[in-house]
Image (cartoon, rainbow, N blue to C red; front, side, top):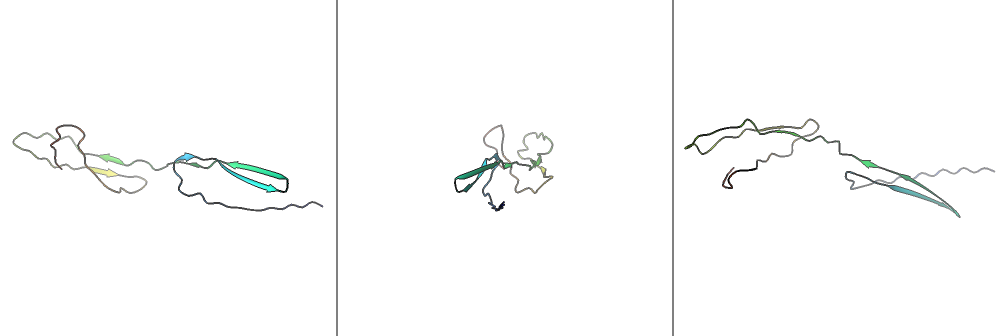
Length: 95
């Protein structure tokens, strides 16, 4: 007599991050273990947004301020926030 028994099990993986994981399933029948592995690969397919700080501006003293106008686009999502920061120059810059 042939006896075919099929069992099914599912497991949800949480808190994944960009990496390659190795996951194993072990089945044990009296005196006869069986093991199988799978490799879930988590990719980050989110493209980075495109930032444009605008054209360079030159001012002449006594002018001491300038209006900045920048834009940003995200082709596969939405922009969560904008933030200007000083990259170089005197530390006394104010926004």
